[in-house]
Image (cartoon, rainbow over all chains, first blue to last red):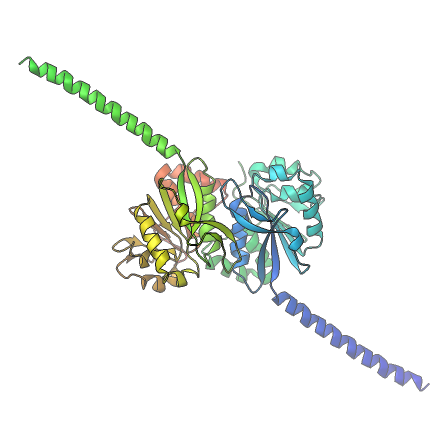
Length: 233
Length: 233
């Protein structure tokens, strides 16, 4: 009978210890949030310039929250038909911290949908990342990797049927400016990537925060993600 | 008296020859227009990402008309606080063909207004170029080089007094989204560079052409260059 109060106090101590641990975890998690999260741009030949550097402006200026990195299969300079040469690192150099993957579109996606090495890399990375964002025909690469199966997604309206053909089991939305399904964000053409990036900020940090960023870069943010005014007639 | 008809026919022949020449010149000039004109981006440490890559998307996609090149004093990789590493060439490698200079802004301009080597280079290049465009605080570099003296110009409204202090003899316009004075185009902050680039296209190739480009990149072009809706209250 004397054992019960002792057990109770032992349990209380255990409870306190657990609460303490959970409070420390919460603190760690807060600290983790405050540490910049890596935004990993998946680069390939003939990417679309603004698909990359629109979101790069938006995430890049938030140096306390996000840290940009550019990756490619071979590393080194990756360029496009616009002749914009960006320096990249090999995927192997990527760390294991919290990560957002960003997949641009561009004419290069027509070739890359057949690049098994890139698609495999994309699939593995996406599954271990906190968020996966694509701009324009970047969603064709996600679709071809099977990552969007059964998910709601969108893409550039002018290449829509080609993108849809990469995986018809995706719930493709032709009207959206950008689409959110769990950790997957997919956007319509080129400039829509900036609207999506701001939408992502709104979802994580509140609408006022996102509006402030748009104002800082003097950008007329299209806030309505459901109705793209560039839908082909 | 017989001489007059002969003179007349001689004059007619001369007229025809002149018309012929002028038609050939027009043709040459057309051919010249069809050869891509170099758009030379002046890069320096801590440039603003979208100041560069917004216009780069717009000019870059017109591969028949414009050819992008990125230059810096030292050549090699130039980066910024957003961590966007772009590969550049040394100014010495620049050819002598028709040229458009594009000067971005960014926090780096605060240092570069004291970089005599860069300012001298900018002054020489601008004087021999067909057009000189600046985005955001890029106009501070043009002003400090003395290139805007007596000219109408604008800049980022949030850094306006600092930019004005670089040369008070410039006719600074605080209301404009972008400003045109002869071959000089200066724009307001960050995204305004895209509006100016489209405005430049409109001036050279017509408004319908510029609107088509804006539509292709699904960008809501702010066409009114005189009234920037981001003017600070």
